[in-house]
Image 1 (tube, helix red, strand yellow):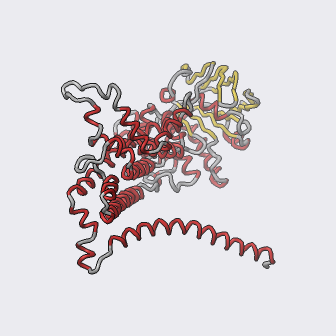
Image 2 (spheres, rainbow over the protein chains, first blue to last red):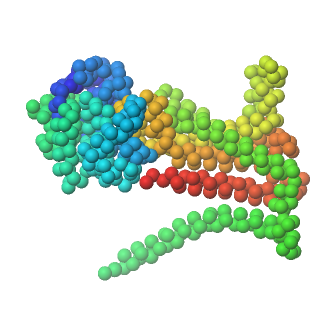
Image 3 (cartoon, rainbow over the protein chains, first blue to last red):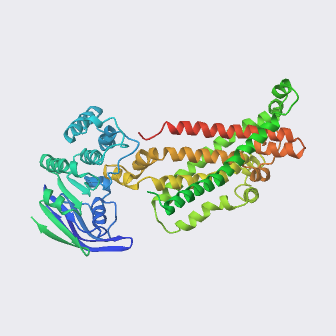
Length: 214
Length: 286
C-alpha cells in the first residue's frame, strides 16, 4: 500500500503542494499527466530521493517520510533504465542481494530464477551496451524486483520500447504483478498503457491528483 | 539533375572542407615539425658511429646528475599525479552532483592554480611555509615542516601537485557530469548507503575519466618548472627534475644537452600517454 498524504515538494522552479493519493496493496496504479507536470518529482519523493517540505508518506502501513531510500523497500525502474555500464546483466540482478550480503548460492539461485522469468537468461554475461530498449527495461525490472520489494515504481518504463515489443512488455508487467502481488505505480503519459495495465488511474493536473478509475 | 545552385554548393562544400583541413593541418604539422626538428638536431654528426654513440642523448644519459633527475621526475610526477587524483575525485563528484551555497566560489577558487602565473604559485608556496604551523618544530624530529619541505624533495612534489590537481579536478568534474546520476540514485533504492553507491556504481563508471585525469596531472607535473625553481630550487642531485635540467643545461650554454633532455621528456610523456591509452582501451564498455 502507498499512501501519500498532503505532501509539498519544492522542485527547483516549481512547487507541488498538498498532493495526496492512495494505492491499495496489490493494486496496479497508473499516474498520468502531461510532460513536466511533476510526475517524476512525485515519484522521487515517494522513493526518498527528493525531500518533502511537509506531509506524510506511508508504505505498507509504515511511515517512511524521513526514511532513507534504502530503508523504504521500494523497487524503482527509472525512465532510461539507468543501467550500470560497467556491470553485466548477472551483476545487475545480484546487486541488491550482494549489498544485503546474502549467501552466494542463494544469490545465484535468485538471479537464475529472475533471468528465466523475465526472459533474459541469454543475456546474463552481457553488459548494457548494445542491449535493445526492451532488453534494457527487463534488466532494470529484474534489478528492481530482485530483493522482493513491496512496492514497484515504474517511470515511463515503455517509452524506449518499440511498438512490436510493447505487447510483450504489457504481458510481462501483468505477469510480474500477478505472480509477485507487488503494488505497482506506473508513471506514463500514454493512455493506452494505462488502459492496458492499470486497475486505478490517477490524473495529475495543475499540481492536483484526480483518481479516475477503480 | 544538378542545377547551377547545387553545383556551386558542391564547390563551396569542397572549399569549406579544404579550408578546415588546411587550418587544422597547419597546427598538426607544427607539432610534428617541433619533434622532428629536435630529433634532427640530435642526429647531426659526420659518421654513423658518432650519430649512434656520441649523440647528445647518449652523452646526457651518461651523466649521473641527469640520470638522477630522470628518476626523480618519474617518481615525483607519479606521486603528485596520484595525490592529485586522490583530491580530484571527491571534489569533482561533489561539484558535479550537488548545488550548495558557495559552490560558485569553490569553483572559482579551484581555477586559481590554472590562471595564476606558475612563478606566483611557487612564490606563494614559499611564503606560506614562512608561517606557523610550518615553522613550528615537530616533536621527536627536531625540525620544522619548513626545513623538511622547502628546497627539499617534498617541495618538488608539493609544487607539482598544487598545479596538477587543479587540472585533475576539472577532468573529474567533467567525468562525473557525464555519468548519469540516476544510476547512483537507483543504487540507493537497491539498499546502498551513499558511500556504497559511490564506490560500487559511480567510481567504476569514472574509471576512464580517472585515467585521463591521472595522465593529464602527470604530464602537467612533468612540465612544471616555475614553482619548482622558486619553491624547491634547482640543486643538482637533490631537487633537479627534467624541466630544471633543461634550464640548467641552457644556462651553462649546453644547447645539445638541453635538447637531449627535452627529447627524453617527450619520450616519457608519450610513453605515459600510450600506456594509459592502451590500458584505457581495455576498459571499453562492451
